[in-house]
Length: 178
Ligand code: FES
Image (tube, rainbow, N blue to C red; front, side):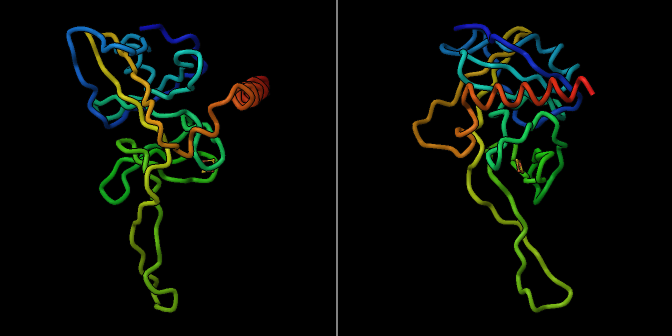
């Protein structure tokens, strides 16, 4: 187990996946922070294991963890609103409003039933899993993340590079200087 190396942002809000609760941290898990601090902040981002930018968020009594950068174009999900679509809690990317389920990392979109019909009728569809979701565990008030190391590629993997992280950090620091 190792501790998370970096934190670049907190904000406010809460999230839906129940963290598993154990008497000791799972093997290969990474310490994120104190549960009370994460609950208070609502959202915390960490570079985990020196290789993965992860967003941990608390919403409606539950903790969730996912890749921090949106699968579509790398948007900073830590600034997204959380809303329910089709019965599923989603984070809405602040850049182009893509909706990503907190539980599975699915991309959701609204399809039009018949473009000729008036008024238009739509229904929700899934693009499948696009954002990598990680496992959260709470142990005696400490929160840990176990990285999802599935070898199956997930679109959000594309933004887990040192180059992109630097770009994002530079953008954030420019924004904070304004
Ligand atoms: S970068 Fe997230 S919707 Fe485009």
